[in-house]
Image (cartoon, rainbow, N blue to C red; front, side):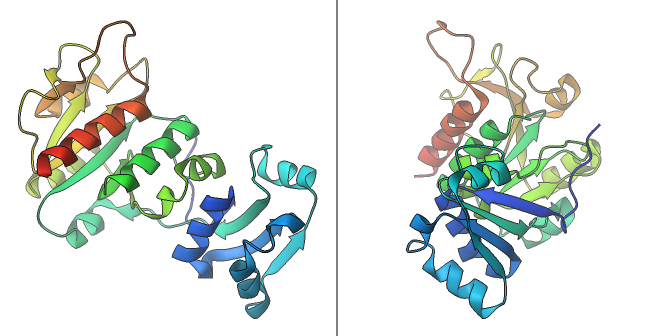
Length: 249
């Protein structure tokens, strides 16, 4: 099984919004920058920082950026940064303000583009944190950060320990866990959602692990026409977060 990454590892980001957001949030983590000449004006602040702090930057052609990023979708810039820290659950909960909050628990989600889209929605709706299972290889990647369009810098990532301990800690802090399901779940729109809510989302096809789903307070589904079996996990996340937010307003 692939191990979760270490925080001191380098992460290569690409995409203009992703790079700008990462620099704005944590300029000290910048290690190196590559860009095409046409992006110099839009990235003048980043270049000035590189000069002032003796960080390397290199003007390259687009094909070299594609090699560095591993994709043609680099938008003219690649930036190497220190991988941001993931928080342990105990630390995250200790520092979390009281009051209403929603969290996401990603059980088995692995596609980096889905992860990025989930982070974008999480940032948009003010999710307090994204919970990642202890053994899950899911972590920030260049592709996920690009799809998140800056959202990856706005939502803390929390690495869980044992599942039973994580559930107990969350419940002790007043959180209600709701497992998402394709069928046989409570209608999302049928009742009031908890003030402190953890949405437990599973991988497409497999869904939430049965033992984890059984430990949740309820199973919740998004009603539809039935013409397709379900929504993509990232699309479903946006619907869930939007309904919880709507009820708070």
